[in-house]
Structures are given as C-alpha cells and as structure tokens.
Length: 230
Image (cartoon, rainbow, N blue to C red):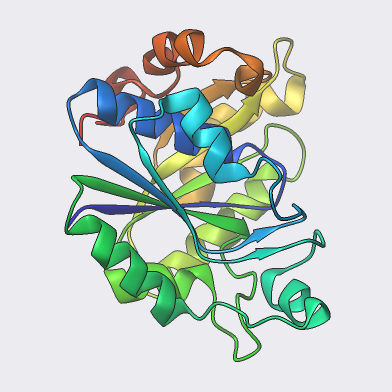
C-alpha cells in the first residue's frame, strides 16, 4: 500500500497545487493515482473544490474522492458542528484510503489546514490519519517570514508521533523572492528536520492542465531530492 499524506504548516499555502503536481508526476510514471480529501471546508455543495482542481491540473484519469464538505471556511470539526453535520473521524479517513489503495498504486490524502487541525470534536487530526495508515507526510510551507518556525513545529509534531516526513515543499515560490524567502531555502532542512524536495512557483495553479503537467517535473524533480516516480 502506497499512501502519501499532504499537509501544510497552515492554510492557503498551495497544498492542492502540490498534491496535483505529485499526482501528475506519478501518472507520468505510469502509476494509477487516487486523491482523497477527508474534509473540504469553505466550499458550498456543487462548487469546484480541491479534488476537482487536482483533476483539472493533473488529469481526469485520476480518481477523486471527498468524504465531507462544509460550507464555512473553518477547521473541519468547527465547520461540521456549525452546519449541524457529522464530522469525519480519522478512522473513517484511513479506511477510505485503504480501500482506494487496494485499487491504485498511489493514494494522496490532502488535509485541510495544518497537521494538527481537528477533524472531529474528539481531537482527531490528520496526524492521526497518517499514523493509522503508517503513511509519510509531505509538508507544504509558504515562502516568507515565519516559515522556519512553522516548519520546525510541524517536524517536531511528526517525530513525536513516529510519523515519517517525505520532505518539505515551498508551495508558492515567488517570481521575485525577498531576502527571508531566499535565506529560508538553506535553513529549511535543518529547521524542519527533513529535506527540501520542491519549489512550486506562485501562480502554478493558474496554468492549463497540459502546461501544468509539462512543468511539474521541474518543480518536484529528483534533482531536488524527491523520487516522484513512486
């Protein structure tokens, strides 16, 4: 079973685009891929969500699945409670990922927000999902100030739970990076305790699917430390 959990040091930092890039590279290597979103928040029913965006960018021959959707842009447990809906438990997510893994070479589980954002009111998090699955976590960070501290905290949380880190990706690398962003590249591996395996450029999610797939290898290629043939 090959499952990769994609999490971030926060929200709105490019997790969906990174998930799509990994999916595109795995498909280019001939692997069958599924993408699982445990909880989509801030998107109304029928609207274009993260799974649909991954399929648009990486290809519609990828299987997409979403377990729950809540309209308010809040932590999943809070959004579920306010909507009067049932929250998603880590055990449910793990079971869904295992079912997809029985039919696909790679399952990408894209979280909502950061690693320890609550899925349910019992304290279940994406970290619990990764632990239940025995899956590594790919950590997505922003580029500028605050990145090193957030990456360090996320790395500590993973190590404390015995969860492997597949590496760190900067999810929205600016065309003209400032001093903090440039310096972070050298310091991220030490701060996070994991290698820097990708730089996804700002605006990558605005590309057409064909252009996105053609460019993805340059963002997450083996030369940056990642083996995305999976």
